[in-house]
Length: 226
Image (tube, rainbow, N blue to C red; front, top):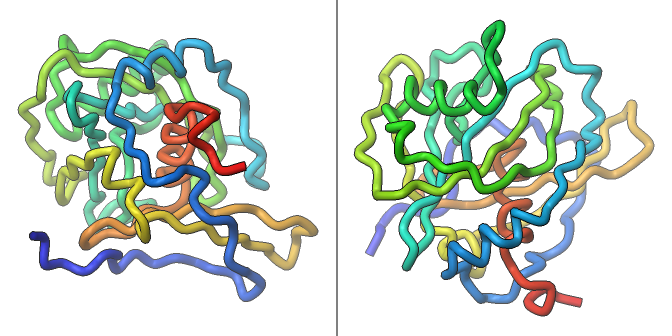
């Protein structure tokens, strides 16, 4: 049994005006069928989420890589403390687009650079809603991929403190997910902010937003709370 407490030391810039949001929209059922998730994503048309961020100054992509048919598992990383932005936060492998590069190639290249993910294992199966981050003013295109085999990964110490292999079933367990509603002084609307409390880490921000999208994409509508 993991003896660590849930949650981590991330610095969360919560505004003064906030309140608790909705509970998890899924029952305690876990995502145990990677093929079901793939089918759901195949028919999903990605949109662009309004986050209140200014127009993006750069374009970037992240790779949401899944493997293990019997227990779908997602690959996350904890960024090093000396990164210029989002230091110490949990994120997906990804980064800024290079000139002349497709955003899919960006996601795959960054995953190889950060965690040595072998691109020959990677098959794109879908795309989640694009979003623009407030802090880095980057437009993020999130690609979902399945891996043909369990990967052998090595963290790049310049960028990654630790590689986190998280079963999707863990994310749907009671007490892991929570939502807050934030309202900044300059805003007239409440915005949902998602959190997942892992052992030793809190996932929030854009990464938690994408995990929430992934989980709600892969669960049948009959599994959602009405």
